[in-house]
Length: 204
Image 1: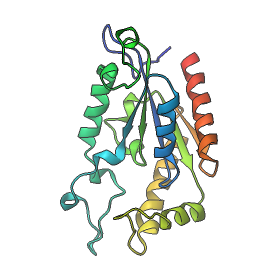
Image 2 (image 1 turned 135 degrees about the horizontal axis):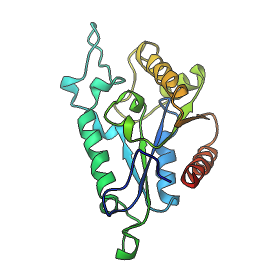
Image 3 (image 1 turned 60 degrees about the horizontal axis):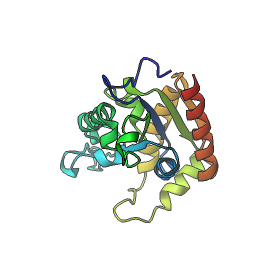
Image 4 (image 1 turned 90 degrees about the vertical axis):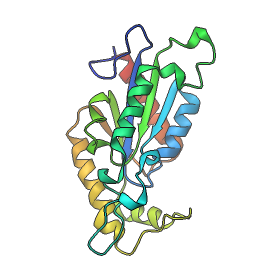
């Protein structure tokens, strides 16, 4: 039922690792938060929690920080966190509040734009969903971001963000574990699509 990847630890609960990747500002983080509130025994893990310090982020020849590449991430830390959750999911699951639920099957939702480029993570993925979006909508959403410290330098989207998306999209298209989902849909529609996909995957 669980395939060759993402198997349970010895004598432990079963674990399924579901990747949510795709375009920046595609609603991935919001979707995962909603999924974890509705899918029993689900756990979230976010790429954005594993960026390295700014001092060691790669820079362009002009000095622009290049956040949209794997070298800007603590990929070892992310992989270690995933391994720890897979080994003892009940220790990371808010649903497991009683001993009777501690051996339940778990779903780990791991989310981020660059996951397909992280070789230490991808072998553990059972199933994936890749959020797509057209250039104009994606660029518009990116420019509309209002939280502090996230204003892109001029030309950053075209030079780094969009090419990274196209690279990962191409990889997603050639991975049979991954389904493309339309990021222009509402958050509720995205959640429904992913829940149905996860349920279908669990039934296999």
